[in-house]
Image: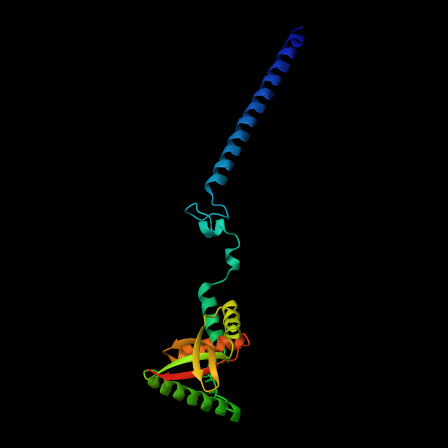
Length: 212
């Protein structure tokens, strides 16, 4: 009877010792895991140095902003290459300015020379006439008529085209004559202008000069 009563007690003691061993094993394993973790934490990783900094070089901020900056190359090297390229070019020669050819006036023809000579002659005659203007008075005579009615008709025709004429009565061996005249003109130039206007209206006149 005593042996049967001791058997359950032995089984209970064995169960207690087994549970205690398991707990102790768990504690030891946990302690080992903590120790290994501490060792791993204190040791340096291959990506950091002793000071705890990364072995990689710090990337400048500007390079981070412009990722394509390394592709631009060195500015100094580019300047040197540009200088070499400029030095290799042949020097440009500047041609001296070409002077325009002197244009000579064309030679005058014989007709042009004759015309100039005539103009000079007319100018000389006009200058001479200016000197004689002080001595003479000029009239432009349209016609001389035996009958006064014919003279009046001629003066009326002149009035229609804008010219004022007068009738001068003169006696001669042939009888009384009625002269239709414009004037007097104290300057030869004025008389010539009036003569030209009459000619444009198909009126022929004769120049009458009298001493002052």
